[in-house]
Length: 126
Image (tube, rainbow, N blue to C red; front, side, top):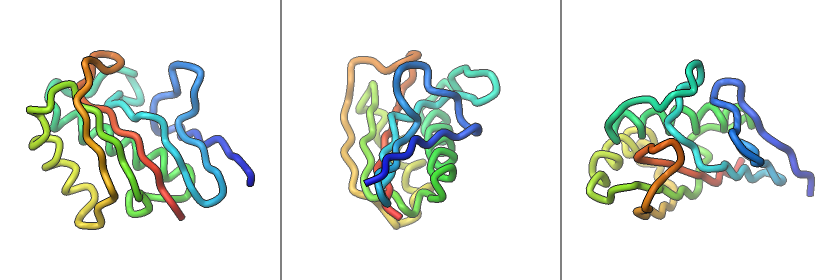
């Protein structure tokens, strides 16, 4: 099976020794996506709704570089620094996936890179 590195110019470059996404056959595995502005590299927004919107926008751009979209996502893992933000994150998430919901795990973590409130990783199948 061929392994292909996926990199989108529409999202911030990886800041460490990892790829934005890796495609293996017809499956794309994304790294955790942060709510970073592509131009400035800064965290977008100070609330979980705004950050979730940016994460999903960056996720969609990464998938687009692989010829896919959110409709191809079969599994996500959502990391929140405060599980009390679940409802706000879920409101944004619901609108992005529009009832074509992937399987999902949501967990609370102590901290996330750059002090963000939310990070999402995904698996997509074409």
